[in-house]
Length: 240
Image (cartoon, rainbow, N blue to C red; front, side, top):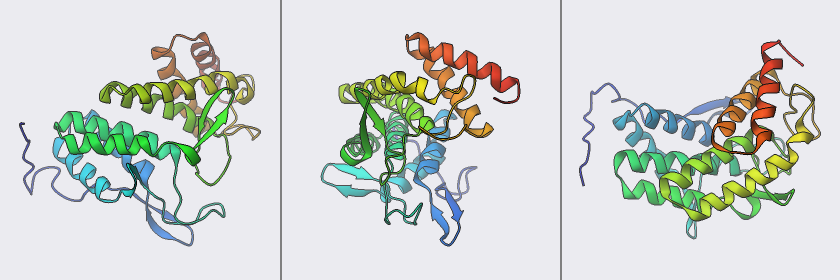
């Protein structure tokens, strides 16, 4: 197997790339979801050395439980326990590690992707509308739209790269729940951030529209494109 050598002093030669954010009362803390999003970006831009360093750092931070791997949040949030886990982060982890494993031809990263996917079960999923909904915060029952839509996209990607039938099945379960429940988030030309909540901020609505655009391009059901076009028109019109 051909291995790409990453020398010190190269353009990507400093830091492991892990993302930390400052949280009130907790200082700077490791942010798994943003770190895996950063890994996806490095893979997309074919930054081999940066991707390898970040993927290695992320694998080293994994918490193993049986055949599954988790990336935990080590700070309190919304009164929940510490540490806590996120189904949303697990889905993006599976995608990013699978893509990194393929790019770098590294079976260890591919195995880590499978372990991340195996962690996306039980407490990190909710049964909704004949399908499944991913928990963004593993300790709550909040039904959050952007987490679900992004997780469908991430699991579709993971399943394609890893040729994973279980990945495809779970992505479809999430898509079923999202299709059936999307009208309950629909405020006409805007979306709720979470089920039963207020209108999403402009930042999150922009994200919703982009996620729907991507789903409409890969999935045949008309609801994705119809909702995308309607919400996009309102977004361009500056608000609900």
